[in-house]
Length: 321
Image 1 (spheres, rainbow, N blue to C red):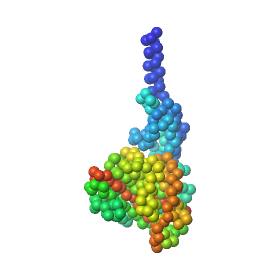
Image 2: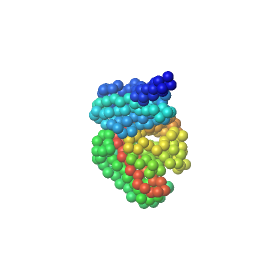
Image 3: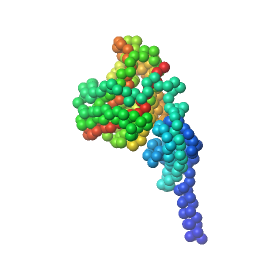
Image 4: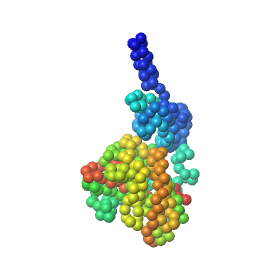
């Protein structure tokens, strides 16, 4: 009897290891837009992952997920996988066809500026990227028109390395647009070794009506592990408390920022990273400056080792209202 009971237990465990994760979206064999909305749950899970074409694209330490993943056009093999506290693995495979943009890919209107990473005439510096605009000269470069890794077929690779605590800043001028008060900054980024970076900075800057609005944001990977925003008046970073640990390696990370210029200041409204949205709601006064202009910027900071940081950017867009 004991032997029979043991066999029944083993059979139950073996069957459980092949149990499905409950994936409510998307449907197997369906045509969807990008980013792809994926919703799944497993009540007994302690962690869940999404694999796209055998690449780990998303993970969360929870028993349910609801996220949007940017996926290139074409047919893809997706696996939603979970683990329970005993190490048992459960998975549900499905095939999807990505045929266009989904409802969450962009605001209702098309981006005012799209595929900015593929535009020419980017500027850069390393010294100006340091503390007080006086950092160490650091080797850095930009390579455009990259097909792999890429979501659009034309990503850009930003590299910096060689100087401990060095950094490099890149920016692209977009011309004046004084009538824009609401800004939606969206992009995808990819890293092979996120542990090499001290921090990553994603910015939008606008000059209008005698004021300079600096929408400076930073994923402070190795210090606070949070999103920080720039207080222009006090010239300092302020932690929002919204988490920003090391990004996923060998996977595309989708980032969106909502900004407003209002009441003579910059309003950091919200940040969304890989489908998780955090209401930031920080406001700081803008600085006095004449002129009219708009630009987007990206900065990569090195840690004390000075080893190279490489970041691919794709689908960089800015929508204005």
